[in-house]
Image (cartoon, rainbow, N blue to C red):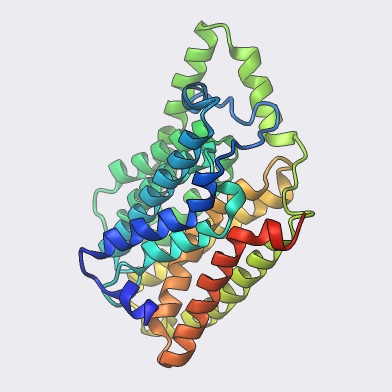
Length: 333
């Protein structure tokens, strides 16, 4: 019943999604907290201003995280509507993303990765737009540009750059070296502006130190966070089932949809690799990793023919996300 309501395509669902977000953030809004940054994590060029404005106001930080998650979920929906990644017309991707991130309670406060997620999605939209596009140069350039802007908020987003380059090969029938160069140029230009700014404001050495810290500082928020481990275990289980379902549908889907899901898979793989190869990457990267997962799980919930199993799996996700709101009291870590 709940899933059926969330799957509907009515405009009133936006109010429902807002209420879901508020309910999942309710505990954090009532007992607001600031993120425990390691040295330099909150000092990226584009995030510094937001950090200075909100520093000392944890309620504002928690509220902003909710607003940014809602905006991210809306952009996910826009991509789904524009490129028809899910067969049925539905706004379910919004609910799925809010519920998933709602279960990661330690991220219910401001972090630069939320801004990075927004620009990543705009970049993905530009990337998808190059399929069967006779003049893709502007969209390719924009894909690199928006990814770079996201990187200036959250430096470790740079791991997705190779995924974007590989995706050009997947989306274009005729591969052209100039298209790869255009994407790289689009990526480099914001970085050059940032480099010029820090150079002329005598902040170059500080910027280099911030980048070093954001790559090499050993961080592991998963090690003793057993509730989060359990929640990620459930998401892994649902992702595996959703992947099997997608493979069963693969031959029957349009060529464009296959290409889009392949791109999402590539982005998922590279963002996941960051946990292995970048010591400073931890729970915050889940905000990026779970973007492709949202499309996949949404497709699962709209594709299962059995109403019983469809509702059961959804209630399992929803119920676990709700339990995560109280997990630190039930299972101390």
